Length: 92
Image 1 (cartoon, helix red, strand yellow):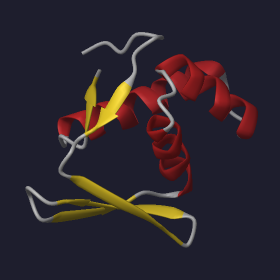
Image 2 (image 1 turned 45 degrees about the horizontal axis):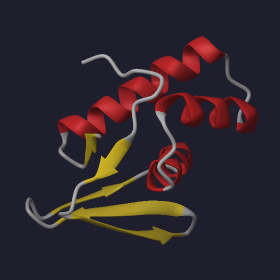
Image 3 (image 1 turned 30 degrees about the horizontal axis):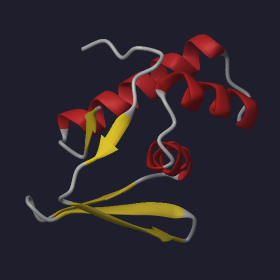
Image 4 (image 1 turned 120 degrees about the vertical axis):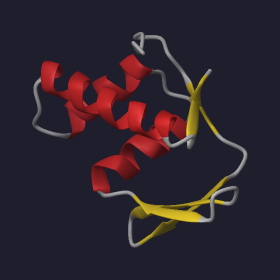
């Protein structure tokens, strides 16, 4: 699966989440699974929640962290693909 610059993501209806100590904790009700996101993953999650597209997420992270565009694209791509594989988000 190739994510496009303008790809937008949607949080699955079975996912419930909250902010605990500045990190996002996810609960998938259909699988009864918890997932805690680290600081960067939580930042990406908040951007997904705000309906940022893939390009906007990458641009925001480059502004926020000292990271090259190439590495940021690769890391965000891997993270989002993992969320899609786990059925936490979908490609909209």
